[in-house]
Figure (cartoon, one colour):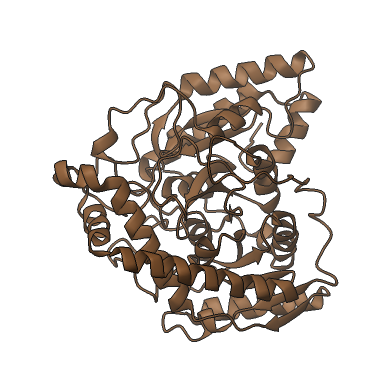
Length: 465
């Protein structure tokens, strides 16, 4: 049975009908990894023995009537900043090549308890910031749509593994767009939940007040199923929110009739890097949502550059604080890109940081005010398609090709959904942003976009290795 195009829900139905076993799903996925990954470099470590043990346990539990829910028996991968007990967690860096955690991160533990089958650890940019780079201990992941192009960062291996149909879901992290960016550039769905919705305990930090954990996946439903497993209060994560978790799939097919959606058009329409394909993709999506019964109107938010500046100051100050000791004692063990970015934090003053936090409050209030009038916001995920490896991108600039950092600054849930292939054959996506802890509406609108755009009929690249 060829399982590479089965959704998480379809795999679950097949498991419960007895037409496939978790072991068969795992072996099929491991075979695809062996065949395709040598040319793409998604996986840093394939945990074959662990995967088969997880799969045998999942089969035994189902046979005994112990059903752990929709993720039971599903193969997945973890970005290599997630601690895994007994399995190396390197952060794609020389500094942590010998790091073998003794405990799982909370996210890894929840996926395991839900019956998930861990295939391995996947590439990132060094410490979730420095890359793509060729001076690290592992090569950078490549984009299956065209391996001469980047995947996006920093959840690069996660996006590669899904776009090459090795897995349906892989975990990412998002500090300035590291879930949504790779999702947009690889034709995937990527959700950054509300800040505090998913525990970050056991995940190596980049910026304490901007970091979010969440899944990349093939479809909106795949992401909804996964977030159902991950969401929930963790009293040992000081930022974790004790908020009820709804059924994320309950309203997926409700459509957008009667919903009000605001478009901060100045974010992307006036950006010099915005391509005609991206602008057309956003306009086409707006028209489709209106035809489906939504009210879609332009909305004014503070300048994108203000969000970007506040986010970069906060990120660099906090990242430098995390890495200061290693920067002083082991600077040459960092990759060149990582070191050059982290060192910027040394120049940020206390006044800079405090002023960025004050600006953050005002920017968050502005987004909340807009979401008081609208059920969600819609904007571009990025200004163009994935660049080639030989055309480096400066993600520090206010004119970044990704349009994601505003909602790290504010903490609102935000999801990238693919809508089309651009003229160069690479994917583009739009971004749906919701009210705090209203991921359900984000999923609902994202599912409508996914359906209306026709993306479901677009085949992923047939990368053979």
